[in-house]
Length: 319
Image (tube, one colour):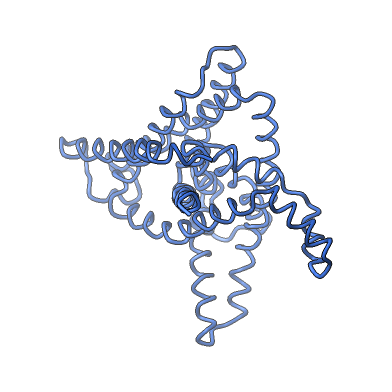
């Protein structure tokens, strides 16, 4: 029970990270020791499972489906997925509140999270060969360039863009350092999808009181489209990463960890923009005063401590 609770809590942490632009749920999976198990479970998905489940009335089909589900480590995926969904639904509101009131401290906290995660993981990877060095440089450059891209906004995006955004953003779960929420912001989809998700959930709850089913369908269409894109992207990217880990394990890890270092550009530049007054809503801090610097440093140190504590207390629960 303690192990399953641990998986659920790690899912909570992953979901919270996935909801934050600039932070990756894959980072949390990597530092808590469940990354390779997650990749293996997703990559083992067999399309024949769908047809077997549709023939649940047949004993042989049920047995085949159960065998495939066990191969996918379905219990682990369910516990982790429940934690992720719980966090995404609840944490987005908290992130929006922090973004409106104390954005500099929020981004400083995220900076500390990612920095400590990279330090923890670099201890496990010896970047000593030309292949590993090249992979590390490529990972850093990719994340650094993505983190510095300009954000756009799409008030009413096409379903094709929503589908594509779902397929790309799911990289947050597979590639540590690449934030799915950040990618959605760059596509101009983050605000739209975040608002649509909460409106959809409210519309579903309103059905109990006689709400409009047509409104649920209207809001549910982009949400479903995004989820379908995410599932297909997840199944595709997971196989690529699984293959890379199997054949070029340490070079792949060097690439993944370096992604995290490159991604530090995003929270760092957001802190600067908040304090210098160029952010949309600078919150409580204004200018590089002594108290401002102290508050930013403390927030970053809290993020560092959170990662180190998580790494320490979950070390014996990685498998």
